[in-house]
Image 1 (cartoon, rainbow, N blue to C red):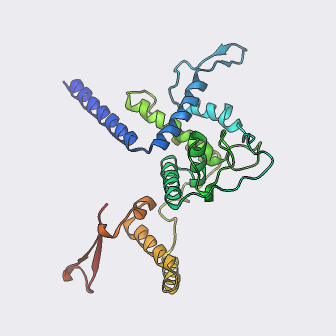
Image 2: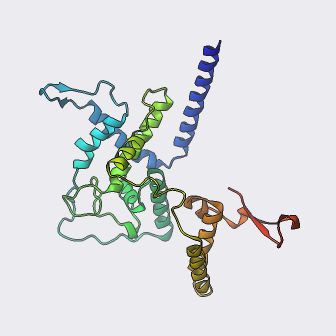
Image 3: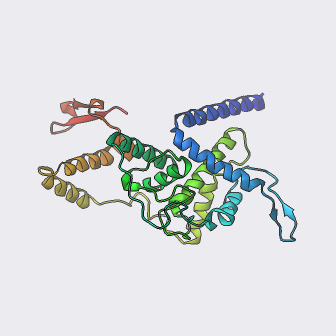
Length: 288
């Protein structure tokens, strides 16, 4: 009886996990989905490519495209970390000028890059390059103009290794595939990225308390930055905007994406009862 109840509960949990993952994928921008799919195809091709063993015999991965920590580490070591910036095929003898876009198109292109950067966890400049590599019709914003749309060009000199942001984009795509495999009752439940980070931190003797609860700014530093911004807020609008952003981040503990999407219509000011403290206090409520 207990085994039957456990199996039923496990089935409901797996179904909920699959539904949540599918909803997340449905909400992803089309460019993010396209970029991840291209890198996942490279992962599948690498997994199915025969390789030589120590005795010179050829073998392939017996578990196919299943994502595991050791296999992901081998893919990075044998393929991704050995790639070089490709030589531009067009206009090799002159420097291209940034393409000027209309303001509306520039904002759209920049927004797409920011959404992709948020999903992959890479800088915006690397997300712009990923979009330019995966879609020929994508026009990068002038600030992040790409010099080569043929391959993984990281904006560096030809022959250089891929940047950390580009490598992270490949890892994020494989981690997305790993989530799908786990949701489909896969046995590879160990997060590949978490294991690699733990090994790297231990090998480099990283201080595990450096990013703990004591990390951040002190009370005196907090008041100092507020005073600095207030002194310039009367003549610089950016100072006022920065101070509001810092206050929301400090008291609301919100991510930057939540703060940037906040609108005035989502904010309400409430009067706290006099019994709440010795002085009158207003409460700012935000709808997320």
